[in-house]
Image (cartoon, rainbow, N blue to C red):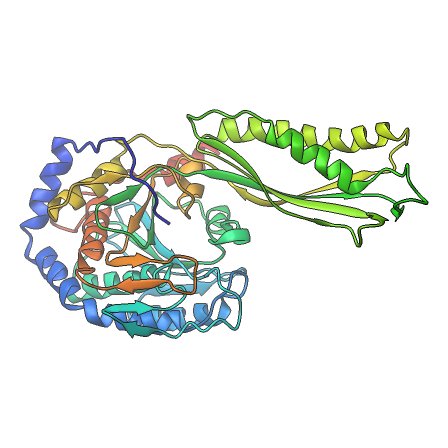
Length: 429
């Protein structure tokens, strides 16, 4: 999801500008751009169709199977659904260019049984998930249609499709699996809702822990003096709340959920909390994690010491979320190319502050990646009142279309601006 605007200014080199001057003068590129504008209504209808298929995180299979059929109908090659549900195929290039992933995510934050059928009101389309990431899924498909319609042959391969597990406790499991199982990826574009101006090139990392203190429990009066898991929990929360973190790079902590106990006159047997820590720096995230784990363990010791007990209260710590942070320069080639594509359409590029998207993983691995907005207006994200307005939404898709062509090149027209790094990385490993 896109948030506040970043402060960095976009940088576009003369060589990148020259490529876009050539691309914009090409009749096939012009045909593809015109197609995307004319395809806007069809794309919106397809977006509604895809959103109606519920796909809670960890239960994306039905939508994934349908998406595979959509890719097959567009003549995408070698389509597979992997062991966790990612759906990807290839639109082959001429063979001498880099390999670029272009994808959206299948899952939504909404539980099974949520009514995701669209309703049109006051020029807007309302449905849970219609924008995040129904828009991204539909954009992937119209991009393929435009390339096919204009008969554009790229130099590099497009690895194109959809991931699972982007939301919440899905923990980016789809994109993690993609990179664990492939070593041939040179660049990555994730598509989310957002305007054509926006470029996300940084990734906010996070770790989430479920922490459970356990003890024998007992009657609040009769067993007074027994070490209390909820008291240990309170000690930990108080010390976590006193932590100091840097404002830049932004680093945060939060105890979001607490639970435990059975009644007012019972010494609890358990006390649980779920903690979220985040940072725009992987180093700061690790540093905060170390402090957090120390506090959690010390709280159990302090509670036992208070009552002169030996390990009466114990603590169970489970990592339930792990999203790596990632940084790259604002003058990285993939960022320059996305900015040049934005300018080509008459918009001023905005380099967003770091957030968490599928791009976190490749950026963390040193693979060029950006998350781009699929166009249109949207709001109410992650609520039952989520909406989408398709007015001029084609600009977002055109920007991604031009970004793709700049990165992997057009046969007989432009060279690839994206460097082929996968083979080098493979040899280094």
